Structure formats: structure tokens, C-alpha cells
Image 1 (cartoon, one colour):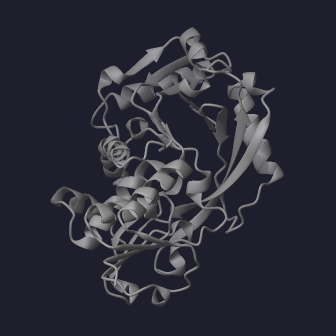
Image 2 (cartoon, helix red, strand yellow; image 1 turned 90 degrees about the vertical axis):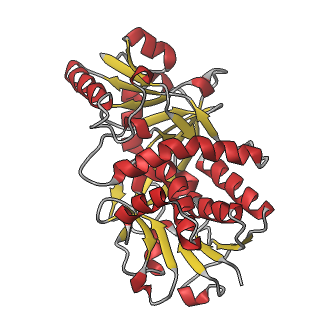
Image 3 (cartoon, helix red, strand yellow; image 1 turned 90 degrees about the horizontal axis):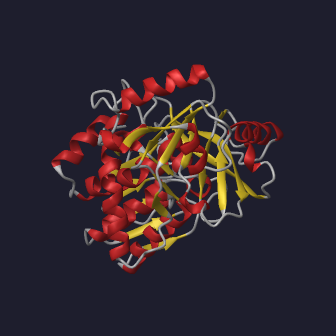
Length: 359
């Protein structure tokens, strides 16, 4: 009988399995690999230091992610997993007109205030750049009226990170099964279960108010040897753009009410392309590599469900889902922290954070 069964093999479930095996636990991970998994489509901006603090407890996740990511990548590399898809590349935030330039200045001022930033950064890593510098950093960029840079921001390929986590967990003995699970009773007997099934989690834990939100994302080929060093680009309004070695990823739509249909639509493609070319017209001639569609798990209450589910009808059932569009930032810490909680191995500090996200 395994110590832990994890349902869902996206980045959250993979992190849970990985962490549990690091604790010496025996693990079975069950994943249906359903079309539309958020991890498979996610563009992967890791920039908790540019998130504002609001009335919800999500700033606690941003702070946890800020410190956890470097540890995670270092630990995976120590395990021999060097293809994690993660790179610190910086983030360029731009204004496209005079009104936005005023908003941008206020945004930067807020991020420099540790009481108002979700994950306060060293103020020296957040600084303004002039329009010419911004253009040099991201060559396809349109003329801008203002810009600032966060040097600490990073990007990650969700597919590669998941693969590295699962490979490391499997090397420590985790068993990975690709099959559909209709109910908790279909799982192997175990000491504890972590449900990390993204938007599909309520099928096993019906009390969760988690719904799919469709996101359509475009990948364009870029023939520039320096493309992989471009920063993440985020206009104050519109969609993000981020570069990898051979491509720029643009997205994404946020479509509620689309259900579990990971379909491309004319309206979604038009929205992504219109926004992208208004920010980076230099990409107009770039070949289309692919479109991806993901179903984000969005929590009705506005922030994730992390922790034990006493009303599940089964003992020792835990959940980690509802991260919405921030899954690749918050998800690795969440999965690892909930696995520790399920195994009785979590720290007092982590338990204090998780208590704010209890189902």
C-alpha cells in the first residue's frame, strides 16, 4: 500500500509526487492526461514580484513561490534533471500611450512599497528604462511611452517542468499510471490522497467550486539567435508575450463558460493576434508554429483550495487546485506543501500559509 496517491499529473500533482518521494514516501500518481490540461498549454510567466497585494491571501502564495522556485530548480538539477524549461529572463512592462504611462509610474511605485507588493523585491531590481532601451530589449516592440523592468522575473515551459518533476519522482520509486479515475474508491488503498486534477478535481471532490476557464495561446517562430534572452513582455492592457529559444508565445484569452471544450475559436484567435500585433508589430511576418488551448482551474472564491477535505467521505483526502492563470507560479509550491501536509511532514510556517487556503 503506497503512502500517498496523487491524482493529476500536471505541474501541481507532479510537484506533490516529487516532494513526497523526497520525504521517502512511496507514491502512486494517476493521471488521465485529458486534452486541455492547463500545464500543457501554459506559457509560464514566473513573476510573483510584479503582483499587487489585494484583500485575498494570495500574496502569501506569491511570497512562497518567490523563495521556493530557486530551491526547486536547484534540487531538480541535483537530481540530474537539467531540462526544466526554467530561465530567469526579466520582465518588461510597457505603456503604449500617455495615459498608460501615468498608470505605469503608479504601478512601479506600488511594487516598490513592501506593504503593497504581493512578493516584495529588492527595489534595485525594479527600475524604469527609456523607450529606446525597451525597444532594444524586445526588438519587435511598438513605440512605447514608458517602461520598467523587473530583473527577477523568469519564464518556464510547463511541459518540461512537469517532465523533470515526474522523472525525478520516478527515479525515487514513484509509480505513474495513465488512466481515468471516476471516483475516489477507484484509487489504490493508501495512507493519504492528494487530488490535484486541475479543473477536473470536482469530479472527485464535488464540494469544490472550481470551473474551467479556456485560454487560447499562440506560438510564433522567431529567427533571431538572441530571442531566448528577450524578457517577458507585458503591456498594461492586453496580452503577454514571452520568448523561448526559437519562438514567442502570445496569450491568452480568458473564456469563462466554455466548459471542458479545449477548442480553438475564430474569436479567440482574433483577440490574441489583434492584441499581440498592437504591442509587437514586428512579429507580423512571423510564421505560426502552433496554437494551444488550456483549461485553467478557476476557484469561485478567487483563490486556490489547498489542504484537507473533511467532508469528502474519505479519511486523509487533500486537494491542491484552483490556481487559475497563476498555476505555473503558485503550483509547484502548492503541490509540494500539500504533499508535506498529507504526510505529516510540513513546517509550522507552511501550515500557517495553507490554513488560509483550506477548502
